[in-house]
Amino acid sequence: MLDHGFLTRAKVYFFDLDGCVYHGDQLSPGIIPLLGRLRQLGIDYAFLTNNSRLSAAEIGGRLAGMGLEVAPECILPVTDIAGRFIRDKYGAVTVKTIGSESLERGISAAGHRTVSWDEGKADIVVVGRDTAFHYDKLQQISSDILSGARLVATNPDIYHPGADGIKIPETGALLASIEAMTGTTAECIGKPEPYMFLYGMKLYDAAPDSCVMVGDNPDTDILGSARAGLKSVWITNGAPADSSVWKREPGQILSCPDVVLNNMEELYRLVGGF
Amino acid sequence: MLDHGFLTRAKVYFFDLDGCVYHGDQLSPGIIPLLGRLRQLGIDYAFLTNNSRLSAAEIGGRLAGMGLEVAPECILPVTDIAGRFIRDKYGAVTVKTIGSESLERGISAAGHRTVSWDEGKADIVVVGRDTAFHYDKLQQISSDILSGARLVATNPDIYHPGADGIKIPETGALLASIEAMTGTTAECIGKPEPYMFLYGMKLYDAAPDSCVMVGDNPDTDILGSARAGLKSVWITNGAPADSSVWKREPGQILSCPDVVLNNMEELYRLVGGF
Image (cartoon, rainbow over all chains, first blue to last red; front, side, top):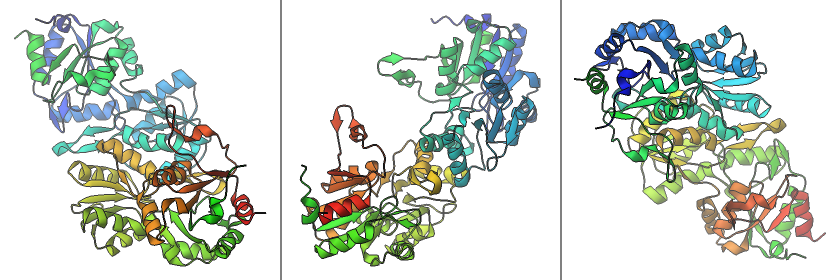
């Protein structure tokens, strides 16, 4: 029997949202009783998401619409954190934002000057999921980067799951073109990079091994947890839990979840001891 | 002294166009006397280009505007050849074209049924340089490919040189996103793949070693020549002629030009024996 004791001894749970807490517009069965159980146990929880289009307030509204009330300060999307990451690392700079209005607002709120994609020079080009991405924008920002602007991406995800199993292009799909054009690799803020994990742990004053990350994406949630030293639960949603998923380099396993479960109801039963 | 005799013993010269025969809207100095010299020597010439936006007739018009009159049948752009490549390999099929109107016309002319990007199902999605490429198109064609459509690209070039040294996104930059989304690799028609070289050699009934390819792009013109068995001349345009350019695999040189020259005038002098 594996030791699942850490699941009830944890200080904080971090949950990924899309494909984990909800699918499409439906909450995952089990998530509401699970959160209630965590509260009974005195365990905090928060939501750590690579969503680069919605602010915490907007995500809170969406969750409420599905029937889950969450305090906005527990929702930590890269949209709201990107500006702070840039300020911590580079100071207050001029930023060209390729993405949503929420992302641009978040970056402005952190004290940066923002310029639109087709005008002005920027110190940093931040790329998020941009549903208005097009050829001319690719050319302009590639030229900016080749002229010295730094390339930062909210997250490396290539797609996220949409309705009917359709793959919705994410930031990483757009980055593929930009990186090909410029011969550079973006610096990523979101999972699996450590920044958001560190941000979350600081917020709750929690040591890595007292935190549990629950996510559905091996490439971001689980790899990032392993790098940052958090325990992790992989929700497979029925995907084959093939150990080859974890082999990132020949012969070397770089990340491995502590627990593999099909869905949130299984996690609820495990935490509840049922 | 290297043996340059093949330069005057050749049966056919193939020239790349952009960055080779012309730069921007200016013919390269030396190209007109060079072509005259080849004619004197009884050597044929033709133009082999990965341009996926202009037909032979349109390119002929552009060259004439710069002062170079060329018979349209000597201009072999991938735009006009793509439909034939697909017919030779897959028969007459339904094709979704992501690119220029000329590319779509060329594909129709080869006997295929074409459908627009946002409607219908296609057997093959052909991607060329598409200056109207955008996020929704990326999502739709990725979905088509994941549902079974084959991915074919006119050419793998990531960019081509524009005015003031700006890099203009080419087919390969758009492919980077599509390949990331779909986890597939496109089948490429243009250089460095062999199809266009074979097409040109067949047209002139010429054996590979009686042909000379003159080009400025090591990744397409020179690598393709080496693969297809043609002699090649690399026009560096002043780039460092570093032999590391040719090392495609560790310890293994996969392609190497037969002659390296700075510009077309040097080739004219060499062919003329001046």
